[in-house]
Length: 120
Image 1: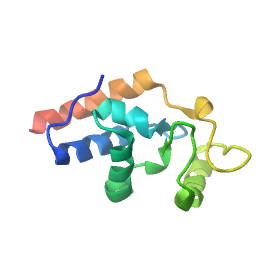
Image 2 (image 1 turned 60 degrees about the vertical axis):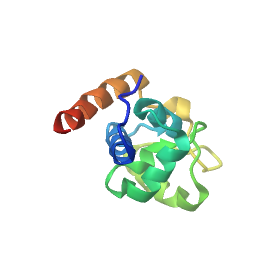
Image 3 (image 1 turned 90 degrees about the vertical axis):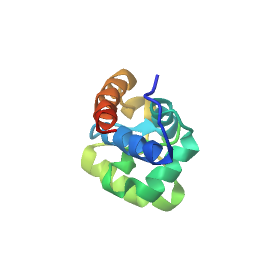
Image 4 (image 1 turned 45 degrees about the vertical axis):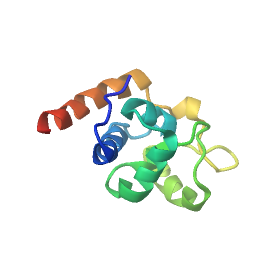
């Protein structure tokens, strides 16, 4: 399904491109992005943690829509601005209500990643 990475730097760039494609008010899971990029969900999380400051990292959750505990307040501030309502216990959102259309995300990602391929 994904446009596969060529090397470690390429994986980082592709994860960041994938995260940029998630529209405001929507979320995707680490696994959703991993499937697009051709890597694992833990790698997606590590890349966003280390390099994701300039992309909408708050739009990426775990498969249940839950957040990393140490970052939940930062996520919730962004979510409030985008209209994402947290679950009653506040540890994430109902991913079924806010998940991006994965077909649309795939199309957006393929288009954006093609520009990266053209540069290489």
